[in-house]
Image 1 (tube, rainbow, N blue to C red):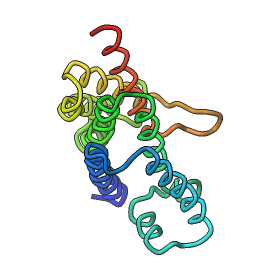
Image 2 (tube, rainbow, N blue to C red; image 1 turned 30 degrees about the vertical axis):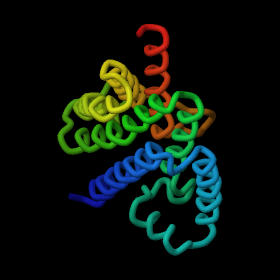
Image 3 (cartoon, rainbow, N blue to C red; image 1 turned 120 degrees about the vertical axis):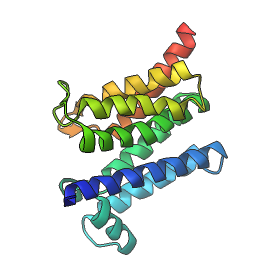
Image 4 (cartoon, one colour; image 1 turned 180 degrees about the vertical axis):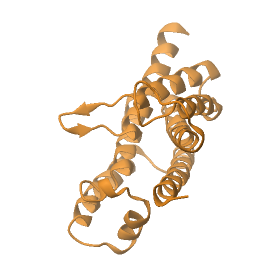
Length: 199
């Protein structure tokens, strides 16, 4: 396994561990949106500061988990966008929908990349960097975890929408919006809309 594969594997394992931890902390009301907001602001500050100086523990994480292309722009970009996504779904949706959306982010995103990278053969027509096999795996794994919070048909609809939206490249100006923000918002929105208007 080369360095890129090893880095992506480590990143996705960390992604799942952080996602599971966040879900548990939210389920048991250990963290609140205010705490998440404070951590987000502190994270942005630390990210910008790490461009200028090496911060011992933060630098170790960046050295071991950050893609080279992001190290000199916005270190920890994925984590920052994930915190923004968590905060937004908690504010926009009922808690069960927010938790289902975060479960989809935690598991679908990681599984789709890993299956696509290691077993994928068919490139997506929407995104040449993604494989159909990975997208299908992510769409199928998401509802298994999201259905702890919403009915299965809503969990599947959320996972399907998140899987499709992950294939799209969304930019505001020159800034590409990270899928850690797109996935929970797309999943939460469709779960809310179907639950409200079609259920």
